[in-house]
Length: 317
Length: 141
Image 1 (spheres, rainbow over the protein chains, first blue to last red):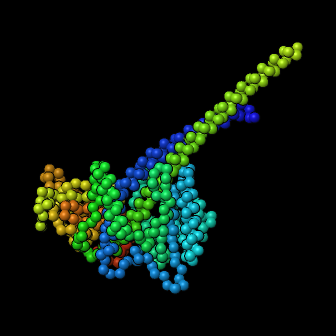
Image 2: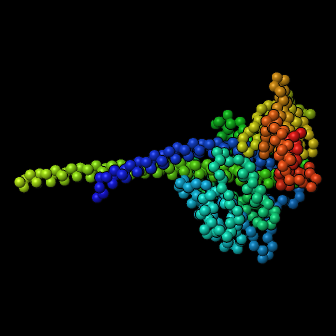
Image 3: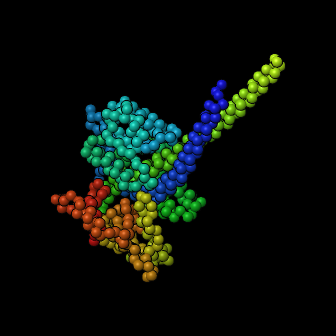
């Protein structure tokens, strides 16, 4: 049995751990709110862009641009696939980073089994650190997100531009983005999104989404931006023509997709951290009560033992 | 400028929205707006025919209708405009009020750019970006 002093020390140490985890929980709750707001603020632009690209893509007369169509592979040529992995810069957020990394490994294995050449682009320190060990040779580029209060759009645009330049230079033929989709503070879903070729939603999917927004708007009519984003675009004239409009719009659309994914990822990270820290705080509380019980029992046992010693000593005299 | 009976009640104004990826910059009913369209500056009045435009770097000039407020001006680095019966939505990468631009610092940034031998093309860029020089020159104007 540990001594009383040792028990006391352990209780103090667990108590200070609990203080830290509960502070971290509150910090990430505040940050979660902020990143959710950012994700909502980015929505009108992304929705509008998506609807425009979708309606343009159905109208163009010429051949589809390669960013939508993808590149056709000749016989005996192996497709070069880029995986953009979005993780967090920091740990202590439960299985958040681990889940994304696990999915990335699975995708790499799967693509390599199909005979494709894979390269990696890690956004976020944790993903780079974990994947560097096994896949250091195929890591094309990596960057940290940095400690910014708000993710600037320019950062996402830079990532998208890099991928697009590689695509145009023929260094890659396809790109997939892996990030954690934010469902709620306790549920984040690791998602693979195809960036090149771009996934263009068809009219049916868009209509369903707009109908959903329309319902949400009826519940909360104050969200003007959402309401306005809800109407599908009218049939209209185009200036300049559809093909060149679409050609300028697609790189922008790529950046928007990356931006949206990174915002989702940031919200997921904070959600995961909040849940993890909440659990840690609760575990620390449990541990403290167990240790306190143990401490009190030991203290009583010591007193009883001393009493017995005194009494048996007196009897012996 | 044909106005249909259904919109005639609002014929004096239409809804203008300036949307950037980070937030909605402007969202109000206005009387008119002047856009730097890719094929030339154009003014949008209520009841304009539906059209989708690409925008050059330039100034979006908003006329409020109410004479009290001075016209608002935003500098944009290019983007897209979607105009329908009663609404005009501008999708912009970036929008700043012209009053917040400091001409001196823009001139410095322009001077710091590497000299570019190729003549500036005013065609729509395939990269989706307008060249930095073009943006900064437009900013000075």
